[in-house]
Image (cartoon, rainbow, N blue to C red):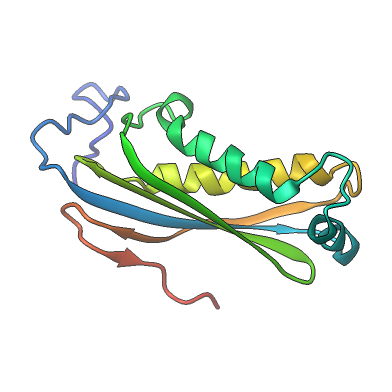
Length: 159
């Protein structure tokens, strides 16, 4: 097993020192799915939910969250994000969220993309909970990362 980078010699959690790593372009794509009744998806599409524009709120929430990831995840480095994009696709009984984060930095942006997708999902939940209590957030996952020492990684196709 390789050395655990987030533990010091005494086994205490620590932030990794990335000072010696080269600054490179990094990107990550994460996805989340919010499952709900077809009637709830229809209300989102029609813009008739009690709290307003669900998709706009989710997009803004996701972008804001990506920018604040280091404040939320204890050992994350604060990164100067170059770009955050959030795509929201309505299905028959779900909303699929795809969040992309890019930065020119010494460490990757996977957590920023995952945080964006997660907060978008939570925002959607909050926006529609008045219509439906049993909404389910599922499959928050990293789809792809690029840049840095490990290069490109992509999730294998879903089963």
